[in-house]
Image 1 (tube, rainbow over the protein chains, first blue to last red):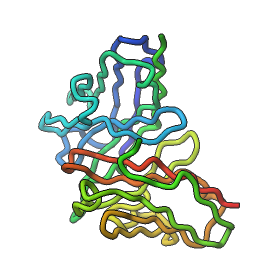
Image 2 (cartoon, helix red, strand yellow):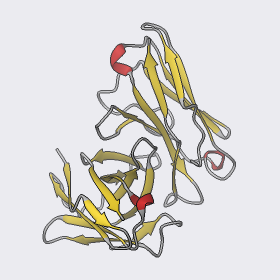
Image 3 (cartoon, each protein chain N blue to C red):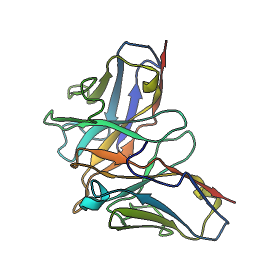
Length: 123
Length: 111
């Protein structure tokens, strides 16, 4: 069974770069069956898609974050990562790493989630 | 401001049924993209509840059902149980399948 685990600093200073890593077990990030992505949730608020990456290295980002966000993969470690630059208090959120899967005959779903990690941006 | 609109809260008594709406537009749900639903308990990660508008992943009780019509979708929960108390989010797509949109979430209270 696939498992995802986020890791990274829980506190980032304003204007600096947020960096998180997702370690994957139970499947290979080189699999053609999944995309690997990030979703965040500010405290007490709803879900916001950030972006995802395919095994080919193709990346897709939310337009409002494009320019600040980068998702990359390390196949040797079976990990993928998120970098978000120039953070502000508005980037304070629980960050989830997720798999984006393609059920046959249907549009993609986010069917596996990490437990999430809270990142607080401090001034 | 979420792209998809959900009621902030709904409630129902045990054994009753409730429906949670998810209203979009011609730029997202109305284009024909599927709607997915997620269930989230406090302090935990969301879980896929419904995919492809009305499909249940393995293990999801048939008390949960989904539908889509035009620019809106709905999640219906029959025979409410106290353990159904959670937040529910709808999700679809915007300009493409690489433009993901969520609803703002609905808190279900079982009275």
